[in-house]
Length: 139
Image (cartoon, rainbow, N blue to C red; front, top):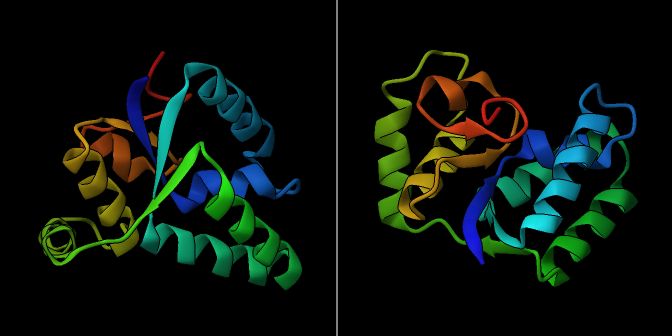
């Protein structure tokens, strides 16, 4: 199996929302991920944020279906954020521009913890901090 990839809500929401400007791009990346046989790590914070965004932007029922799919999928692994990871994310958050969310910092700390630079997400903060946004920075 290849190194894991950490998912951000920006990638997951784009994958689900057909009206999202990155939807087609996210589908392409997802197909590539499937062929790579890499585990996709979803921090529990990202899981919650993704369902909240889908519920608000699209609909509650779809959010429920996505949640069930992520929980039951063998390709995705939802991992709880422990105290050390949360503290490390808070330290990273203190050094970021105002535009960078705490959840983005969680994603980056998870990537470092799992010894990967690869993130399925579109936020520029990932590249700025030395991570690879799949489909953007890996060319």
